[in-house]
Image (tube, rainbow, N blue to C red; front, top):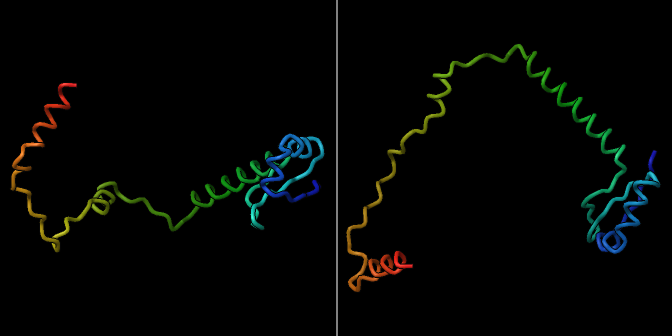
Length: 118
């Protein structure tokens, strides 16, 4: 089993090459923290691969569990569409539309002309 060490983020940053070498060649796991809180870990690649294989196995077991669930039933597409269709909100009043002119100085139209000329 790999040994485990703890370092602060600033210590790990100062001597990152040494941290990587310890992990890669010394079969060490290093937990990096800041202000007493564990944030990340640097682990040997073999440990990462083992974790990935375990996750893949668990994902496969989960998929088989879902496939074999007898209580699972097919739902017709039309029913799904009906259930997902948004229902109009009839309790809210419509917002009034803006009918007053943009401004008396005409800055809105002048601004558009200026932008087109560029």
